[in-house]
Image 1 (cartoon, one colour):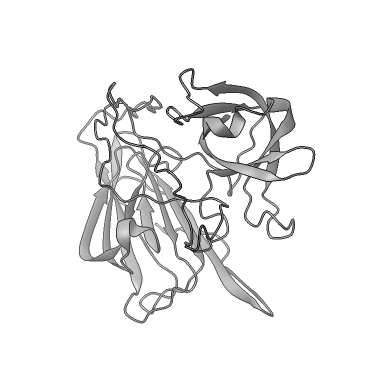
Image 2: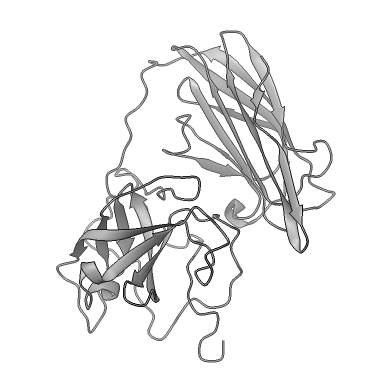
Amino acid sequence: MAWVWSLVLSVASLGVASAQFCGGQANLNIGQTTYFNSPQYPYPYPGGLACRWIANSPPGTTLELNCDLNVAPSNDCTQDRFSVSPSGDLNKDYKYFCGFDKSFKFESNTNKFDAYFATVWPSFNYQYQGFQCSLKVVPSTTNPTEPPVVTESPNTGGDCKCGKKVAGNRIVGGQVAELHEWRWQAALRLREDNLQFCGATLIADQWLLTAAHCMVNFQTSSVIVSLGEHDKNTGSDTTATRHVGIKHSIIHPNYDTTTQENDIALLELESYTSNTAIHPICLPTKNVASTFAGSTGTVTGWGTTSWQGQ
């Protein structure tokens, strides 16, 4: 079964790096196998890729993926990464993979398949060819009914030790993100002058998570939310940006303005429009008991790039 390939487009202009968009869709029957690979395989893949492959098979089956994987490694695969959804829907869940594995294997939990390959600029290295994969329809060993989507909050217990603020410390330096690399990143701005004063994270279709200190001194009517934004100083870098008002804000009832304890708030948006640049972040499910202490995290936003000489 061949993929129905989407248009592969290379755009280049003076002073602007080229970008490629690729991927495909396939409807598979029992016993069928299809194949796909990263662009230019077996030659090194380029930077700036955003490739997505989607497939479906009959009820009562699952999809088995086998790959020769050779993607540039990075900590937690935060750079070039091959993402696959266990449920067959990247909007619900996903797992990142990178590095070298000639016998990479992954089986979906349902009769759906959804994978995504993203690379950053610059990303050309002759050592890394990307991947070549086969996707095969196999009989399901479980009930074909799809699992429910879990959207409950994490069970962290009543004695949480994580998230303590370090006095005077800020996240500084870092590097410029790729266009729409962090689709859940939002900016809080004042309506009167468009000044961005805080960041927020899209955690559901119409809900944002932010810090309580960002909203404690403002009426919701005075704040506008920017989603799908990249360079907040221009309006020409993307057409995907949406500016939305806030319907309701919920500040933690035990927020302390002196100690900054419980510095958390929820914002309900007046409306929500999903596009390729706007998508909620995945939160831990209720049965995740880990506090994530010692784990490596990624911080995003439009914060200052220097602080007290750092």
